[in-house]
Length: 455
Ligand code: GDP
Image 1 (cartoon, rainbow, N blue to C red):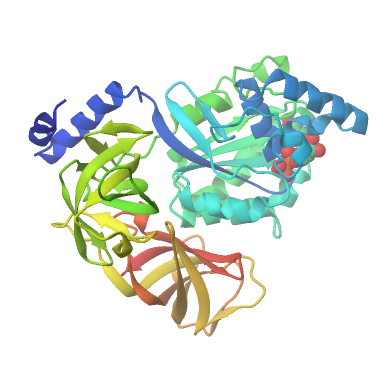
Image 2: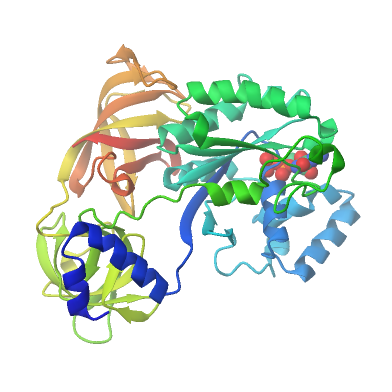
């Protein structure tokens, strides 16, 4: 398509979607993108499950796998072999794995799935939280072993906490892996018991029944991961999809091409010709060469001189594309990482004060008024203070439990007000999801994650 054709075709909002489709075909991107986070109680078998899945899909080379098998045999821990695939901390083991393109990408029939912060052993919890703030969908893994499911599900277990966390962060589609079913003789009764208990809880937690799919598996034996069951005892009663098909059936988020253009700057560098380049993700809308844009919060105009995706020059880029942009008409000093390029006719709100709904994590010191934090919003890192505790909320229903609480303790949900040290670009979560979520950290530890409710 020529620039002129694109201009004409995208004049109406509806047509933008058609143009996107055409471009995806031209660029050979026929599969939808999906970001998935894996959650669940420690030892539920998350690493083993995902490692086995990646292995079955050919993401790990045979030689590496063979080495793991030898090593694990020596240690008498054959069962750990798949978990090692995801265990980045063992440097020796991670070398040689074919995971250049991001170790945790795999494909289903219709999707390219990115595993967010794969559940490596040590740092899983903090990573899971980071992952949860970017996830489109989640996979909840529970251990079906008698007594173990109960431990993970009852108080102190992480099953409930994780499910509530992803729901609070806007994830609405959930796959539930009823794992280690080999330990209970592939019992249908046990599967249904877990489905019954967990299903009732998830409904309470705000998940719609039609958005939750339960799937019986064994990460260890590989049963029902990437192909229909071969185990007779499971075949007798289970006729549903395997795990890979469950993931394939998730609805990919729509690429928000009809929303106003926003690109968050991740990097700035000198280009080859005149002007300079910034790179980042088009969060919403679309952008074309020769478009005028505004750089916020600096409020400086600029012109798009060139666009490229994966080092290939393009005329247009859409929501979801990672692009390099050559800018002209603006000084390099007036752009910084974390800034947003936006449509000058549809400005992004700039504010130093906003209200948000937050999920407080497992913190030692309760949050009180005046609590200083570091706010992470896209690539922006900025100092902030919690200036007001508006209300504490019920974790499942979101109802107000207490107005103006004196403090917020671990694992609570609340509405708070924040004051930034500088004005920043912020969107309401309900308008533009991608720019309406953030994390709060103190001393390198994530203390809370949140969604912007008012600016
Ligand atoms: P994570 O903490 O959730 O990542 O759990 P791991 O993957 O590390 O697994 C915890 C333990 O459960 C390990 O000893 C695994 O070998 C074992 N395990 C994992 N999946 C299965 C399974 O499907 N069946 C059986 N019997 N054991 C499993």
